[in-house]
Image 1 (cartoon, protein in one colour):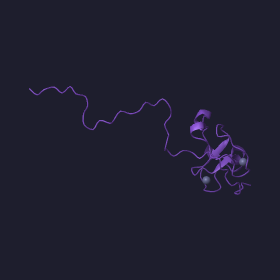
Image 2 (cartoon, helix red, strand yellow):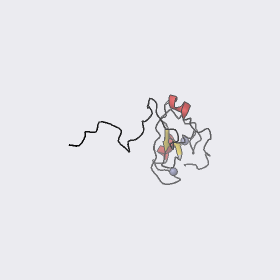
Image 3 (cartoon, protein in one colour):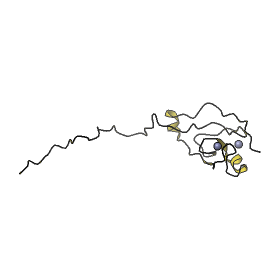
Image 4 (cartoon, rainbow, N blue to C red):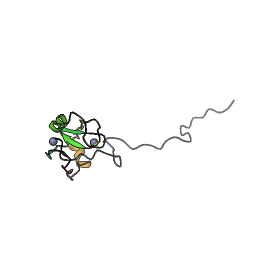
Length: 107
Ligand SMILES: [Zn+2]
Ligand SMILES: [Zn+2]
């Protein structure tokens, strides 16, 4: 009769993972969170929900996005509401300080 194995450390077990008591997105690709509309150059609050983006993060305010019919004029992609980034997360993952060139125009 073979001995019953009682050790729980099987080869190939993943190493202990650190505790996740806060979101850990260090090194992950994150949204640039452009601070302005690329059409009318108005300010867009990264913790607000007024910004609209396409998959390339062309960034527009909600009124320009409505004017554009919900389609990005740069790439033809759909514009969706940019998720708000919580103020506490903006400390670790601040929005881009670089304003996008508002030269595309949307009218
Ligand atoms: Zn705008
Ligand atoms: Zn686009």
